[in-house]
Length: 156
Image (cartoon, rainbow, N blue to C red; front, side, top):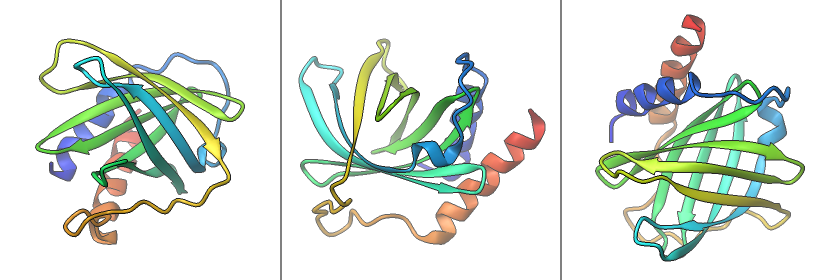
């Protein structure tokens, strides 16, 4: 999944926010435990780390099997919109923020249904067990994604 695709998906999400809360990027930072439903109806659990970086957020999700889903997020009208690279596709989610919890609908490009995910903030450190080949992307890849989102922000 290329950075430009993530940025394009991010633009779509940015335009969808409707919450009036004044949450800021720093309000979302931390480690979360997330539970949701897969498209086939089975439940999943994963770990998520959110790190504020200027106007955007670096968001990494790691499944129990060690699969890494890197993403980039943006706070718009109090909601956190995130685009994730998922295998050869992309997923998008718009989280609403309530105390120590994030909750929102998510979808994957090419599927015709929307699932939900709930993430609860935890004090546990982000320490996923990742198999070889599932490393977190380089800082250059992240910087490219951040620059793409900053360009989008300047257009809003």
